[in-house]
Length: 390
Image 1 (cartoon, helix red, strand yellow):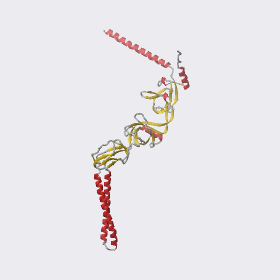
Image 2 (image 1 turned 90 degrees about the vertical axis):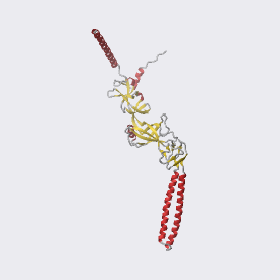
Image 3 (image 1 turned 90 degrees about the horizontal axis):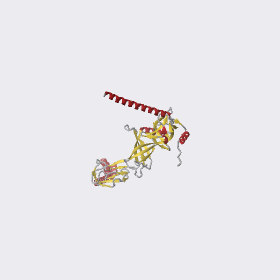
Image 4 (image 1 turned 60 degrees about the horizontal axis):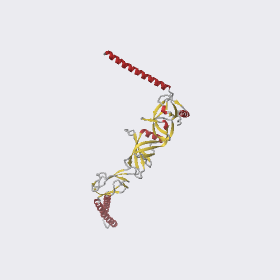
């Protein structure tokens, strides 16, 4: 039994050794063939710089310039509303009516008090004029004149007080007509007609201004720095385009006219704001859009031919020759196109030796044969197999 087991183990070991030997031989032959295979021909061009207007994309959100809560400034029953939810209203337009009777009566009483005090004052002033002539001729005592003067001054003060109460009553009466403080689109009515409202009842409705309108968006702090260096300043107005979620471009151009004074530590971004004209109310408060921001001045930026760029799951890449003329796979970050070239924001720089043709046969760190464009064209034409005549 033991002998049989020993024989079986020996056979297995021998089989493994034979398989290992065959594999090693095959690897040797493969390596030999690869070493004998000629290096692929490639053309090489230096990476060029171009004057590029830098652009940066970011998610944005439409926000109204003014978001105003419409409040009751007096207490009373809400008697009437003069609009439909969603209407566009003008500043000064009456939106609600709070029952005015109480305030109208108060204003009438105050007005009557003003008229009564004014009449008393007019009489006192006439009496004082007469007394001033009589006191000069000693027909009345000086103390009597002084008493009339004091009464006149007291009535003047009473009139001023009455006038103030009347003005205040008229102010309260005016508050019975709740008016729109700004132009804009009105929202949902929060308190309906028939309810008793007070200044602490909260918003009756809300108005969002529509024209002009803001779009706020974050930009990466590195891009913010690049933009500042390009324009030579942070405090400058820049052109902004807006793209809707369906890919349609908003027809009007906006202006980036504000940026926050800090970097958000949690996101590493700077909040910026653009102002857009919105004459047709196409932009709505709260809408999510894509923003494209442009630098004012062109920047020297690397460009690479699109034919030299390949792509895999990790992104776009090119082959750059190192100091030993060996190809190095280099991932790049692009931001738009210029003609037949990609605009590169990261990965390569001007002067890098870029493989522009023959890329398909290039293997990283394996030798390549650098040829001219003419030689590459001849090599390609010699490899074309002519069609056979039928």
